[in-house]
Amino acid sequence: MTAARAAATAALECREQAFETGVAGAPVAKLIIPADAGPNLADDLIQLVETWRKAGTWLVSCRMPAGCADLIQLLENNEFVPVETLVTFYQATRPPRGLTAETGLARPDEIETCVDLALSAFTYDRLHRDTRVPHAVADAIRAEWVRNDMAGRAAAPLVARMGGRVAGFNLCLQNGRTAVIDLIAVASDFRRRGLAAQMIEAAFAHFGGTIDGIRVGTQEDNTASVRLYEKAGFTVETREATLHWINPTVAP
Image (cartoon, rainbow, N blue to C red):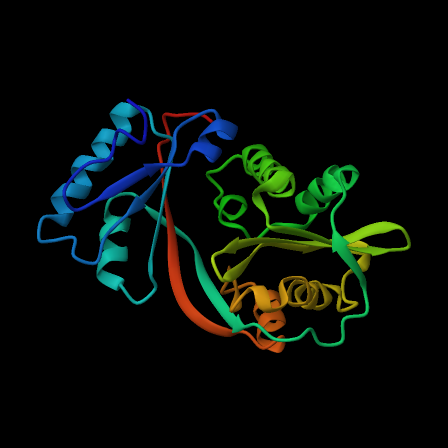
């Protein structure tokens, strides 16, 4: 039984994450708990966890509003472990401010450079910070994520170039009238020069009036990123706790 078929009670929904499953080589899923989950939620969750064990599911993630202490505790009582608090920011579209860096859409020959950059830059994401996830697996998922974005998933795979090199990237999705900063990173030898802020301005320049605003998420304890978005004019929309359930008998 796959993680997608392991879904099932009236209160809960479990969706297989095909992309992560394909890279990890073991079933990965996402648990969704609706606001009206009902009085049998605790029993339903126990049954679902047992279904994951029998199905050979490796990892299940769940995000809950950070203020839902009772639901978070219920997840922890069923072997979920908190790994991050995700803060989501939003800003209405506006003209770019002070954009001076050379930015533009990535070329095909820059994809692997961006993959290497991502592997050196991302340490705060939920997979890398969960010590139960093998580092090589977290790296492999991140690498394929970048390739997938740059191969067409991203509406705007933007890069900044300095001295003929890719110095940073901003991979932006588009959901209707909202752009979403999916991944943003700066090469280590170009940091502390304001380049991440320039990449944000490049997104406002690229999308212009085709969107109503830009949304982006980062970890609450990633203080540098939080300051970056606040300084750029973003305001907090939501705070969510991310928790992982990992089956110790399954090796990705």
